[in-house]
Length: 254
Ligand SMILES: N[C@@H](CCC(=O)NCCCC(=O)O)C(=O)O
Image 1 (spheres, rainbow, N blue to C red):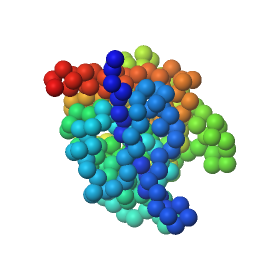
Image 2 (cartoon, helix red, strand yellow):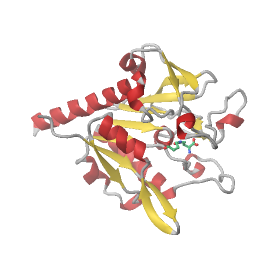
Image 3 (cartoon, rainbow, N blue to C red):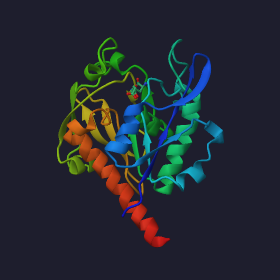
Image 4 (cartoon, rainbow, N blue to C red):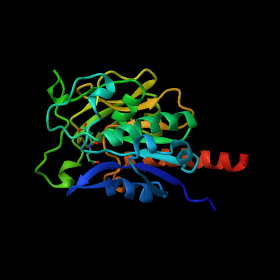
């Protein structure tokens, strides 16, 4: 009987009514339990105090979730965000070193939306802060005044890189995906390979080329209604298989 996999989910740091909280959107928790069959372990945004090495020896994988907040542009050399932009310095200071350490340790990693943006920045890339204002780019935001089912409904197609890891794992070279983001990858980090693009050229999925294990980021939200979507199920299936294989290898070596 396989021991249950433990999957770390880094939290946002947020003040609610003036009180500090570490929070995770429930759909990521439900995807870890329902799509991965794993135990979610919420990782507080402790920044420099986060015991990264101790954590990585105890989890089988890392799911970096989305968030309405944005990576601080100072993290990739851009100027200050416009006033009122929601940022989360505690999350940035937690996830960026955590991502780099997880990749070095070979802990399987799936990064979603803000997570793929953090993956790119952690490895030396940059972001478009308002991709819908870039020449030739579409609007990748979701209608704010709509129901969650409308906001997370498939809204555009992506072309998966022919022969790429995702196209192979997902068994297709095209997919219809949802889109809930203002920002997107601008300059791709040196050792990231593009695994999917939108019709307007926006990078929609990447893989860490030299990672010793599964290390994928997607700009869309496979966690939303994953049970209804074959591509989401296949993506989570590939992530879970990588975690199980690594856990078994570590068990045999113990
Ligand atoms: N704020 C960034 C990242 C977008 C993102 O993660 N959206 C998801 C919102 C909430 C959720 O579903 O977790 C951007 O706008 O690009």
